[in-house]
Length: 104
Image (cartoon, rainbow, N blue to C red; front, top):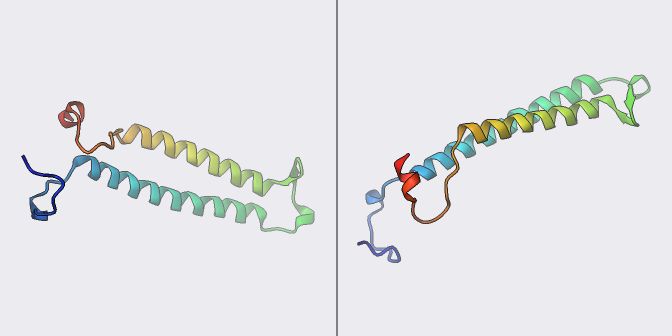
């Protein structure tokens, strides 16, 4: 059995944990998704709010471009959460994989 508390090991001998590959893929997806989502919200707000404030329509005192920006953000966030929960599996964060994770 290897002593996990020592630093006397060769890095090339370490096998990549599949949980880390899953976490890396999920993190990359989330970063790209949020970047695209923010550009989408900015585009919606710019297209709808690029006019004279006297000519804008208001909803409960808020300009409609703001309302549509919030709705776009909330709907994209809901889609992203559903997509991540369906596409990526939940892993434990312990030091060792349990039998159920190792079988996957």
